[in-house]
Length: 412
Figure 1 (cartoon, helix red, strand yellow):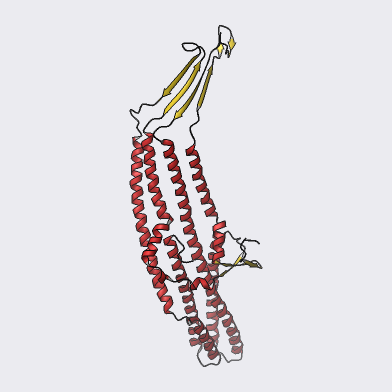
Figure 2 (cartoon, rainbow, N blue to C red; figure 1 turned 90 degrees about the vertical axis):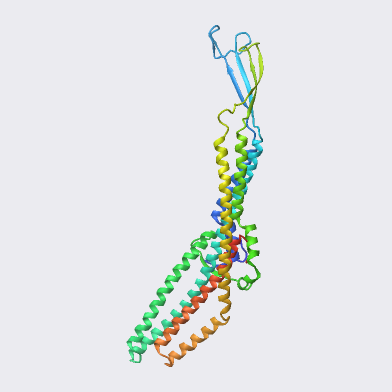
């Protein structure tokens, strides 16, 4: 299986994948992004259409049957008759250039729609990756605890046969064992759902087993204190694709009004004609011009609609600016609170807790503590590690929300 990324390694249908590699696959293989690119290409084709001039029209008429000579389709000067005309529509009021300008604005709309879709999908990718990774770490805790309890359960059942362990203690251990297995299975199912989302976003085969990896630098390089809210707000106003989309929609509405006003001015049609014998004098040549008289229809309805679209676009732009600022403020405050909580936890918490649970297990085997105390501590250990992994995910997801609401890669 070849993915075109040198650092991606595969062994026995297991793909080791870090976030950088997942992003590369996402950018090159995501079906939604590829489909949106076609929308941009279609918009560019509209520019080609707008640049084209109207085709000239050629008309020809021939005498079908001459009842005096009993002949069909005569063209001779003596007994035949035919006429021909060539006409060309000439658009006035700069309609062609205005349509080109409108089509170019349409290309920008399609491009910003593409970037906004990429922004949303990239956030989904990165957030899902972190959630799956830390759930994967929590699953290791369950796995180790289940193996440990399995050994304890077997030893207790053996001692029960000799009358050294009470039945209630064996049942209590077995109950905790089954509870852990049920929670473990539920967590594994959640991880599979998350990995399924990742596979869809990166176009990885559904049968591939993913092993997610986070580089140490991902955690070390993240520092929210380096960025102020004002800096992030400036970045959001500059880079948010949905805000640029709203601005471009307002420009599109202005260009549309310009076209509708131009459409109120009628175009002219110039023609050149030749008639063999149907006019005076014979072999008549004529130059003609045709122009509609705008007495009733001056495109009033479309002009009014265009003005309403401008007002609507301006309101939408203000709404989008308000949404942007509120989203950023909420994400920034959440990230600060999450970072503060994370930094308040001792860096050696996880390691110290693991050493402590080892000592507690040893003391239980030596009967220095009761089964209830042991299981309560065991459960506390599990919950603490799960909460720590959840906090780590929320911390990394908080930085992804900052990237998402600013429309830029503030934190890589």
